[in-house]
Length: 84
Image 1 (cartoon, rainbow, N blue to C red):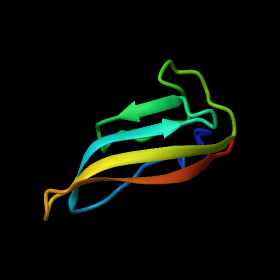
Image 2 (image 1 turned 60 degrees about the vertical axis):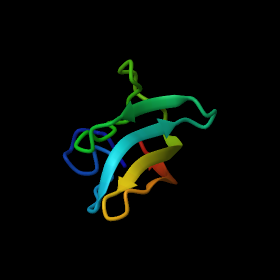
Image 3 (image 1 turned 30 degrees about the vertical axis):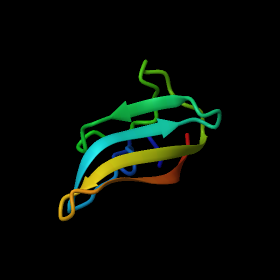
Image 4 (image 1 turned 135 degrees about the vertical axis):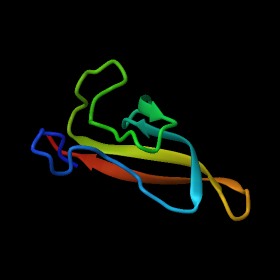
């Protein structure tokens, strides 16, 4: 994603149906968390929690969620590329 203020791909967001979010956490390449939220409507803007811009690169996300139909709590991991 490209958080450059042009209104296109400015936020990393995960949208889904049939699940309830518990937490989305974004980690840098050293494993340190740079962003975390429990609000599914809040996307990552490419900044740290303190508001500093993160460098271009690949970041890992961890989404913990509950499957509504079964009540099972599980997680999904993946990566996102931040381009400045």
